[in-house]
Amino acid sequence: MKKIGALMIGLLLVSSLFFLRMHAAEPPSLSEECLDARESRDEQFTNQVIKDVIATFNVDLDEHSYIEVSLKDLDAAHMIYGGKEKDEYYQSLKKHFFVATRGNPRLFVRPQEAYLFYKEPDNTNVMIHLKLRGEKWSVVGKKKKTGSQIPYELLPCEKDYLKKKKEFYSK
Image (cartoon, rainbow, N blue to C red; front, side):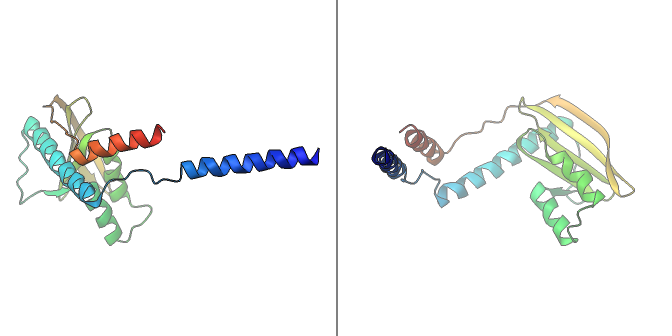
């Protein structure tokens, strides 16, 4: 009985090692060059999307009176000013960035007033008008209009990566 148990454990161990060895190969990954190209493509895509959204609503965002802010910029400003956990200024703006979008939302802010622009997955352009009231940014208006479809193309290195990934995990 002990021999059968030992044999079963031995077979289990050998088969486990064989399985691990078979799957020990590194999964495919994107190269640094591809990651850089993807970041550049995504930034260009977001800029095209935001231009379309702003044009749809015909808002005059004179570059001398409004400052363009991304979520990354907003997070950096929050950290510069102490990164307080209960910061109503920051929290009341940040929550508007977490929506389903094509590209990344952009905030245009000046003292006491801001606009947030983004494109929904169905190409609906959205503009949220915000005003600073006390220590909190409040929505004073929200508009939606049909926008243009902006093409988003995979890079050749991304296509190659997806093909290799599919092959790797189908083994």
